[in-house]
Image 1: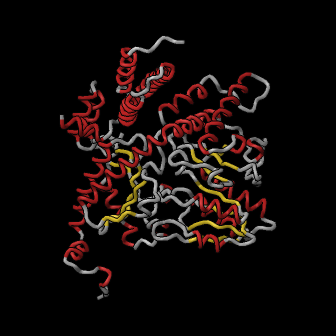
Image 2: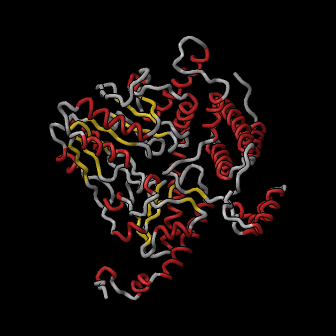
Image 3: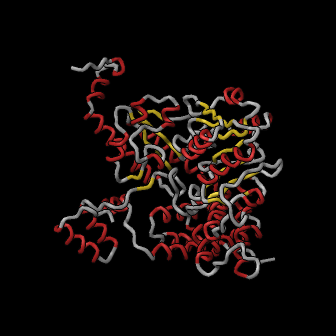
Length: 92
Length: 439
């Protein structure tokens, strides 16, 4: 039986995933990743079974690796910003 | 870069633009220059969808060090590729409720449609010389049928009602003893209408006619189950569900067995139905895309519904005389086809150049002819000319949809103000009743 997952552990991976998601240089990937991570944690908020939490945590780590790798891949090539990003920057 | 028509004066600006370091500076310069306002937003998800980063992540190893031929049986390189291909096949069959052995990899939905229609016709052609399809099918289905007509087959092109949906009674009365195949698409690529696939499947089964469906726009987006819906053959495309381009599949039922004549001869891969080395990297990507689609279907569908309702609500609140083409209920929400009366679709597309949109199918977007799908649902010529298809995907954001709605409202209003026909309509003149005379 694995040790129970602490609240701090879950919060840590959540924050790391959000931080890494925001590193996607492509607007649509970035927005999706942030939205998906937030919704996934919200959906699983009510899960109380220890082994199920363990399972979700493993999945989260697997996703975190994908996010990190793919954010790097996206950064290797230079693209124009989308018109919506340019206009949003102008407003600020 | 979007800067083909730069003059020398702008060129120096351009050089400065490229020498800027931070993104903040870049965007400032870009917006000041006017002609470099950024890349258009993408709202054409029926033409293709962007590759999901998770899909690319699964593909990368097979584009680099795992390069074996999946058909090589004598070494490790072949084995690992074969295993990856079979895992992908499993994911695809899971998504549609099939057996992995029933999945044949092809180059895409066009090839799958050709293989299904021509394959059935050629195999059973000695006794069965009749095929049924609809007027709103994709070009590749209609063209395959046209080719078979040249070979002496008879084809019935079923009409659709104004909602874009076929009538089951008409289908039933069109089925003859020598009918080999009924081919009806699951979700229309132009108007997003869903056909009653389950009912059609049941009817075909009772009449002992093979049923093929082009589900390129449906698989991964709505629930498709080949056993529940009695589908005998089904075409799937990789790049419509966030997978790579150049890969698709044809589901071919094994029990009861559906037999096909292959289109090409060769090494006998894919049960002899599609010879040629199976392209491991894109097959892996396709498989991963299907796995994700199964997991995310509910989540994605809710998102599409939200975006679609948002756009429709914004536009219909601010613009009169907007018609939605197709059915309101039996429709996939990720595809919204609207006609803006008194506005020429092409002019609106030009005005909305910072949004990637289409007036219909990508295959026919080069011609100015109104779409045959809109004509088939009985849309007036002028409304067919004024249609725009909005296609949402997993990666579309609320901001993008709001931006699109705003621009759309602004430009439709502007174009209508310039139109004398709109002015006459405002004054209560019925344009259709006018007798235009030549002097």
